[in-house]
Image (cartoon, rainbow, N blue to C red; front, top):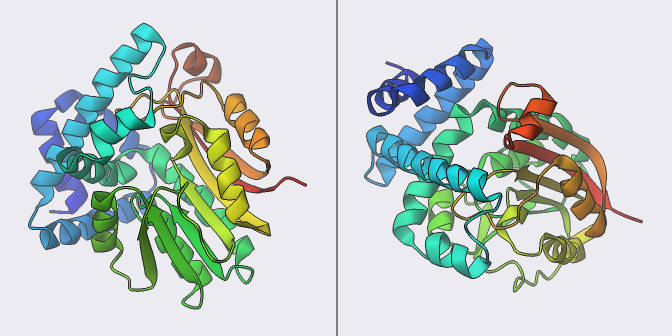
Amino acid sequence: MKALDQIMEQIAEANPIHAKKLRKNLGKQEEAYLRKANDFLEEYVDFASRLGKDLEFGVECYLRMLSDFTQEYVSFMNSGEYTTKSFEDANRRVYNNPDVMEYYMHGLLLSQVLWVHHNDIVLFFQKYLPDYNGNVERYLEIGAGHGMYISEAMKVFGPKVTYDVVDISPTSIELSKNFIKSDQVNYVLSDIYDYQPDQKYDFITLGEVIEHVEQPVELLMAIRSMLAPDGCLFLTTPANAPAIDHIYLFRNAQEIRDVLKEGGFEIVHEITKFVEDVPKEIAEELKITLMYGAFLKVKN
């Protein structure tokens, strides 16, 4: 049985309503996407086995993460605010809590293919990334994440590029090391505000990070100082996306654009994608989560 079929069966046993929704969304995807999703999940199975885990463990983590999201969303709809108010809160609740970080990161890894809007952002990244090939000698990724962006960057930019990853969580770094399996990547355990590279970067990836800080403009300005004058920042972030470690609330795409401009960046390419297939007016009224991605350059 394919890994994708296995995971859907296990999710259906524990949460049949959610499984029905996933199957509906996956059923709209082309065969190429399903093959890619299955290949990723096969890699996940290998990754989990190296940690002494299995697919069942991954599903448990995913469902635990989903429960967190559901609780956060209910609170958000009632209050209009995120429950986590500061980085100190997020660090206590998540980043400095190995148990939470473990299930959260495993859950996010599986969501990368089970939630098709995530794939839309990755495809957007793959579409425009080759435009920068030949102009990149130093690549930085802030937040170890799921490894899909840096893996694609390594395919496009090749072995002669220096690849650095900075993350504040040792659990996240260890998971990324085991998933990416490459000695080309240099990992740095550091708060990004404390990180002081000896040279500027030609390309920086910031995948779903600015919603995790209290002052995203301040973070963007710090990143701008690390970027070469003609360098590129690839950024993703959600709006109306309550989670246990989300701090800064963007309510729509324009609020994101305004912060990017204030942080000193211009948009080269962008994508917006609601996580539910409904008209924009309804999505905004119901506060449906919006995914945003952009290739950015330093504003002159």
